[in-house]
Image (cartoon, rainbow, N blue to C red):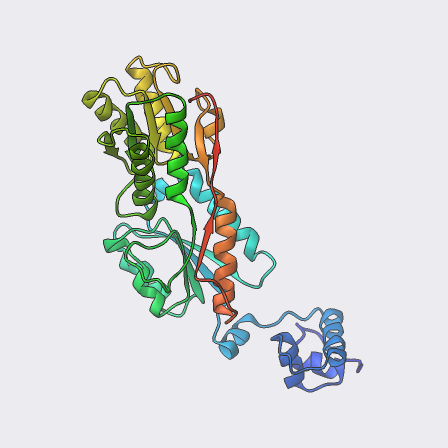
Length: 337
């Protein structure tokens, strides 16, 4: 290697001189090109380490037309995002998956004042791709952006096409297993607190409840809807009790609504699980410490975030990737049932 002198941050040219190779060769090594022999790449890498050279990210982005950034989009209010532990688990999974890569993560909570601001940012060349969680239809839909930008959805878009890339849990089967558990406990007047019907989990979990209840020969008419928040679960439970005081089993489409239901049942003097058994969905961090501890359908939210991130990076880098990944759920039985 050639000795060099001088102050300031090391440059690509200085690394080339130190390694005794051309500037183009150093550039290829920095950008991971396979066109450099292993022996030469090792010499260049050693020069990079000895000089403590840090590649110029802006220059690399211009050369590769990549920003090395990905966005995590949540089309929900900030209050909802920070109140619901599901989102924290997804973010943790995404962060763990991209930690070994050169990609950085930008989290974007869709603006309630100007929803199109997020779309303009995504299409403005600021990121290489995006992850979309808590996807809605209508004004909150991002499905159409898949034609212009690599996208991976956490849950299938209801208005999407079969070619879109998704990571989802088996919501229908999970909801059915929670409902079947209520039936196995001898519950016969079942009700459900369903999620929003402009979101895949809301639709699929209602379908799973109805399927399992019908298979057991039970009525499926006791349905009220919430927005996945505890307050909406409590309100839905009050409406259900007003319609049918004899309810003895409740499946809620997420744990937050299930805990709201527990509050409303306590207000009504209904004992859980003696009078009414309650099952939720998620197994979030509050489920085990609820009073009583909540029986729930566990979904692997952390793994879901990680799988979404890995799939998106593969898409951006042109590697083959399966369009749809479906993760399994697990029934976790606790005191509420």
